[in-house]
Image 1 (tube, rainbow, N blue to C red):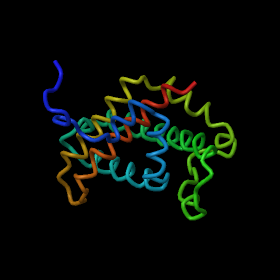
Image 2 (image 1 turned 90 degrees about the vertical axis):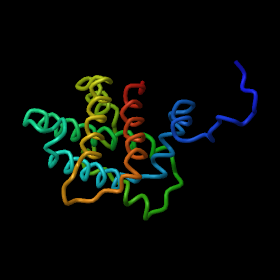
Image 3 (image 1 turned 30 degrees about the horizontal axis):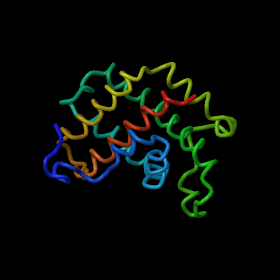
Image 4 (image 1 turned 120 degrees about the vertical axis):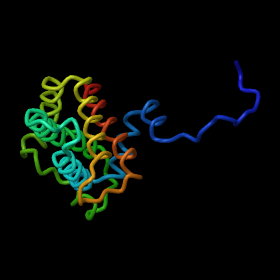
Length: 172
C-alpha cells in the first residue's frame, strides 16, 4: 500500500540507514566521530559499569571473565579496522592522528591488521558478538552506582559498536 501523504512517516537518513546502504561510509562516519582514544575511553567506562553492576548479565564470575576476554579482543579488532581504513584516509590533522594511534596492536599487526580481524571472527561468532554487545548495553543502562554516564549517548555509541562488530564478519 502506497503512502497517501508523501513525506509522512519518513525520517531523514541517519546512521542505521547509512550503515545498511554503505557500511564503508558508515565506518568512515565512525572514524570521523570517534578517535581510537575516544572509543577506548568509552569502552573502558562501559566495562567498568558492567563489572560493577550486580544486576546484569555479568553478576557471575565466568560472565565477567568472558566479557573481559571479549572486550580485549574487540578493542584490538577495532584498532585493526581503524588501521585498515586510516591508511586510505589522508585527511587527518596531526592532532587527530595522534588520537588514532593503536595501543593494543604490535607494529607488525599495525602493518598487517587482517590476521587480528580474522582471529576475532574465528573466536567469536556474529551472534555471540551481538549478544555480548547487547548484554553490555543492558549493564550500562541498568547501572545504579556512583559513576555517571550520559544516557542520551548510549544508544548512539551502541549502534556504532554494533556496526563495528558486524563489519569484521564482512571483511574479505
